[in-house]
Image 1 (cartoon, rainbow over the protein chains, first blue to last red):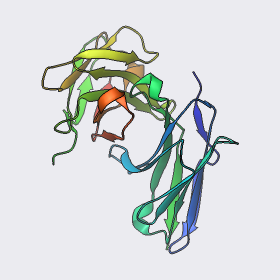
Image 2: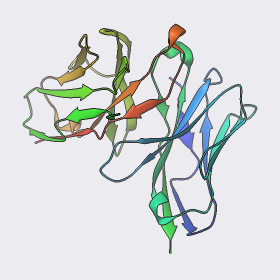
Image 3: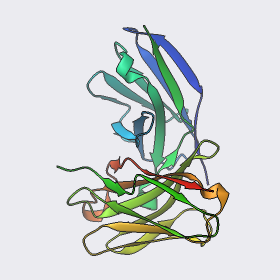
Length: 113
Length: 116
């Protein structure tokens, strides 16, 4: 099957700066995307989602951008904090495939003091 | 509202044994999916259950099986364990609306299985 991949395996940012985590997906039929945060020893935590009929969605300190033309997804975190340090995964879903999520390989975000 | 609960949190088994993992979804959620997470393969979909029926299955051998009960709780079973089955097994629950519209999946803490 097709997969979702992340551009960078690691990302380091200064505390207070904005972070941008990128993701490329290959299944043009995917119509739902989710970003998850996973801290060590824990399960993935839902951050934000976006459907394919939107190109931007904002949450608290986070924004997800979807560019269907180039099949690209990004997660922007404003004013990054030490608690944001974690592995971030993007996941895609095609509504015709029930609840099967295809995950990217993950990006390790490290927030520097 | 309680989150997704997985038991046990940690498990050590010997090669050749079998293991059963349990997942209780968020109250009201009827869809339960299972994923395997390893450093080498990342997060991979195992199967998904809805209303006690398996709706979708990932690319895993038949040693991996599951079921769902009428209260939406789910179990997965791995028989004849191999060293490569060592992984974090994650369960996710979703609220499925009319027409099976896609909704967010919430994960449990996972069960860390070590096969020795």
